[in-house]
Figure 1 (cartoon, rainbow, N blue to C red):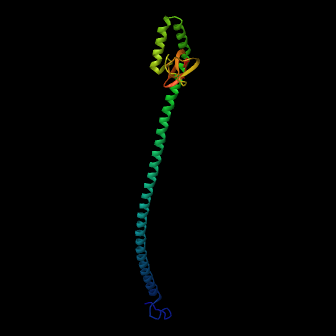
Figure 2 (cartoon, rainbow, N blue to C red):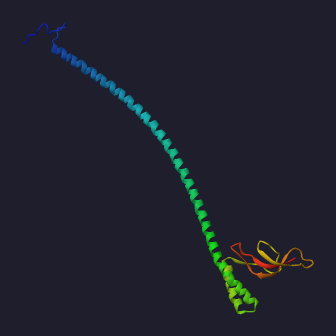
Length: 198
């Protein structure tokens, strides 16, 4: 048997080895209790985190809805602007085409004037050509302005001479058309040159 020194024994009569084991057991128990406390606190923290994450999920869902509404409003605004752009572009294209066609017709006016002069001098052969040209241009939007005995309108007639009126006639009337005027697509292309009576 091992002889135990009296100094090595403590007041309870326990050896230092036994005392170390007992201390170790106590410390293990404290560790186990600390672990249990840690587990309980980590469970509580996990529940709080889940609650916080639910709140953050709700917040993020609300944020997503707000962002969606912003994008929807932006999309609707861009779509409206694009629709307006398309309408304006179509309108400009139509106006440009009308203007370009009007320029071509305007370049043909001297030919029509030459035909009118030839017919007024008795060249009946030219009348058929003039009529065919006028008919084809009228189908495209040309209209004649200025006929004798119509009321004088300074917006479509250009008065180059004036003669006194006849008794009983009211206002001013066109007595003679000196040069034919033309409308193109509802706009005056060239006013008629006329002699005015009254």
